[in-house]
Length: 327
Image (cartoon, rainbow, N blue to C red; front, side):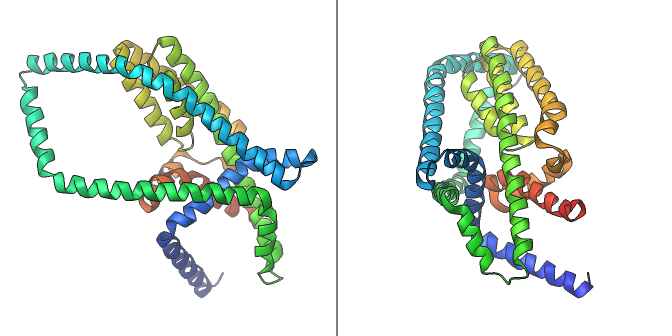
């Protein structure tokens, strides 16, 4: 490729990234809508192959998805509420232990609390500004989530027609390559989403069982959090395990917390070396350093949503780079 042509491609990519940044809420909603489509399209296609129409298949799939989400919420909320009082009593005991420890070390924890209170009072303006920014962020998340769900309904119902219509707007010479590239991207996204969901289910099952056997409060919510953390590779598993260990420490003591850490590390090792390579395959095999860099860049660009989207987007880019060599 000639240097001037390469510079032209860099300029196009830079302009595209600049435009996407200013409409990032819409762009992220479209991407998440495609992810949801990759997750829900296979059952919709299965229903169509059994004789149902597009509208009926789409309705059944999305109603089923809403019922599953409602069932998960119904299972998670009651044990969480029931465990709050137990955790509150445990937190009180831990605070008493910390008070005794600081007294033995010759520290005055009340003075430290007073200093922390004074510091927070001095930072009240920044805290207020951050709270307002947080409200705005929550609003953007809600709008983006609603838009993503609506788009996924359209994509499941007639995404193939929409894609063909978009391809027909291009020059005839570019249509075959764009169609092939689009199919490759959707295939990679589908394998990634289904792989992450399966790996997350396995992690959540074994870690949840371990927490339940050990009698750790909120075991089921922590298992659900472990499943969600699977969609944020490396980092999500770390924070989910850390939170489970903290809850175990507060509720059951340091010995149970160490056991939770050991179980979490064992499950993550089995996932990383046995389960994930078999599920993802070589096409989606990304080094841990690449994933960490991608998540960092994604979080800087688009916050939490960017961190969640970083790994699948990187997988798509790697697949596109490998495709010419494998063709």
